[in-house]
Length: 294
Ligand code: FVH
Image (cartoon, rainbow, N blue to C red; front, side):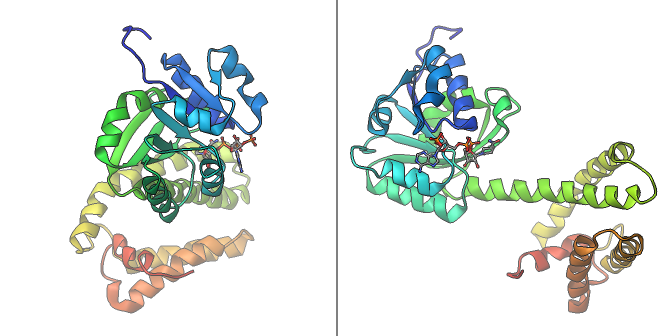
């Protein structure tokens, strides 16, 4: 506590890999920190660093001005906070457990019916990054609740408020996962292809990184096309891209690597072309992505 300003008392419920990192970051920032975990021994190191181990979940919720919950899933959160002896009335709950947007909205309703203020959150970081600016943590729920606790939550990383809809943090979370896995899968596809010619992953990695960074630069302009609903082919038409996709499928099959992902991408482009979008630009595929399917 560098400036000697009083720090918000916080409680952290759930001391898995992430919960331990959250509690440690609060302690480092000087917050009086109460912790609780089903397996109490996971609190040992934190207690040695100055945390107080609550004897029960109810005690932990009652102890902090702010209660941060980080468990395996929303069912565990509900089971734990809905148990006898836990009274969330008047508490501010910040749920950093991963889940989907419907679960987040339902959790907010559940908490509201019990008199608690509820912020949902998504952690876009691994435990070692917690407490540093690199840890991106997203929040959604009532803005006043976020503002009241923004400074304390800032001990965990770079916090961003997304809006009043409690489901937003979870939606950003899965959107981020879609980005992450798509980039990794594309790199793995390229690596599998190149390895058939003796090129190893390490050789391809810098080249792949440059392509990923270049494609990332296209996003703001492509976003404008999507938001305006107009997709003029400024640099390439979808039908041109689809021919390149056919090369990717053919090459994958010819050298004996998995062609499922290239075929999936090509099938979506083919549907868009059949719907009359061949002369438009790639982001017109949003119309395929926006439909139910799969
Ligand atoms: N670890 C990470 O890198 C990711 C980064 C992105 C966000 N996630 C999410 O954070 C949640 C917790 O993840 P975790 O890595 O801490 O997970 P575990 O180490 O497996 O710890 C799980 C904790 O949950 C407790 N728990 C589970 N079920 C119950 C229950 N029914 N009643 C009480 N507690 C429960 C468990 O307790 P214990 O097994 O130690 O007794 C742990 O405290 C998760 O949503 C990630 O997606 C992390």
